[in-house]
Amino acid sequence: GIGRSRVLGVNFSRGHLVTMNRRAGAKDAGAFLYHMSSGRVAWPSDITYEGVFYGHYFSVPPTETDIVKVEFETCASKDPISGKLDYFVSLGTSSKFDGTGLVKAGGRPPVHLMFVLDISGSMGSLFYERSAKQLRGKVEEGGKSDGPPKTKMTAAIEAICGLLDHLGEKDSFGLVVFDTKAETLLPLTSCTEEFRASAKAEVRKLKPRGGTNLSAGMTRAMEDIKDKTRAGESDHPHLHQRIFYLTDMNPNTGSSDTQSLLRLFREGAESDPAVYSTVIGFGVDFNTDLTESFAKVRGLNYFSVHSPAEFLRQMTWDFDYLVFPIAFDVEVRVADDGATGCKTLAMCGSPTPLADLNGALMYTNTVFPSQTMGKDKGESKGAIFLAKVALDDPAAPVHVITTYRAYDGTTHKSVAELRFPEIAGPGSPSIRKGVLLARYVALMKAYCGDYHLWSEEAGPSASKARGIDFSIDWNARNQTVRKAGKRIEASDALYLPLFQEF
Image (cartoon, rainbow, N blue to C red; front, side):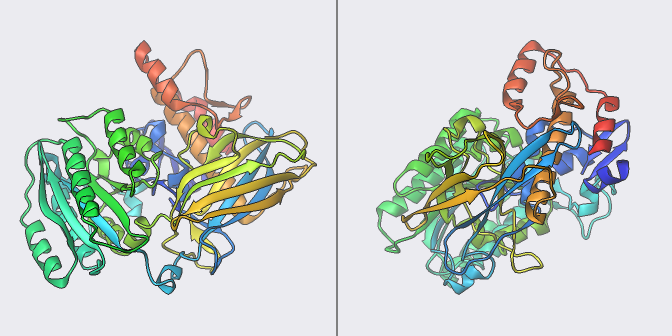
């Protein structure tokens, strides 16, 4: 019981529970790991299905010809707590651009890249490196590091300089810095060798100062990149435009409400040509409530970083895959052909809310290539979407139609037949791993949610009778409980047996 739970990063100590994006959305579970390993119970929004999936490899048939290849798997699995039979369907995706395929295809399209760098006073705080052991709570905060701690500003400067060495002359780079106001430090310019050298010299002069007016930086960068587009300085048919936002995501001046910032991101994604966004949160200051909303914007991805080395890797080794969305509006619908019905009860691995599926079985607004392959050739990082479904007749086949729009403007359609086992079975290793991780996330959301947002009316969010519930709307619960002024800590005695069963 407890031993199995510890494999999943749960440690029953200090008086409470402590636990350790092939798609748009979260690229890791770093914020959740850090909060829980620091002796604080995270919020349910701090852990996402897509973030946890992205930390694991899933078996998918590789392809050398398809922009996006989809592969379905099904399984029937008993809830480990309630014993009820659940049905799941997974959609695995692979691409000819995965791993070394991107290099073989001639590399990503050129990019007009604007960096928006937070230079507020908080960026002068120390940025301790945190190893995997530290994230699992085995080393105290501020413990031994591989080197002297750096400030967030120093880590950002090193990462930007590393990225400049990674860009080519077909790419353009610009830099906007902001504190209480925004300034274009480097106009969007072709990345010649001479420009890269001068840009690095300017970046290394930066010092933290002032407050945090994120909206000013966003607005200035959007204006700069659109001016470059209007000038018509690139005739590449698939030129990509993206803005990277490097900040602690804690704006204290300007437009700081979620909806105002979300509107700015959406306006960029919906413009013609589109300007997409990447949000990078710095360590503990990462505001996951804010960025989880941003993940619903087309073409947007985000992640948090907890060490300078991790940040540098994202800006160099992972960069080409972060800035190249290969498909949009990937949708799976049940065919209207008289076959059995299939309804989605929960969607895991996509930031799209269940209410926004509009009758689809699965949907995600953006797909990115996987930057690394697993030990086996047929494995890709985070390459799975998982749906818990209800079936009219488990013995009957379900016909589904998958459609998507590729980065080059072409549209694609495929048809598949799904068959579900009538009794519980192990399923393939890939879907078995997906179901296990999804249940783990749902159970941790339940614990964290009941700790912070206990509802007398709803009762325990997970129990022997209820099982593991994927359907709880924690945003709605958050608003209700906060308005009522309630904050009742859930008892460890309630969840300890559930984790032992899990």
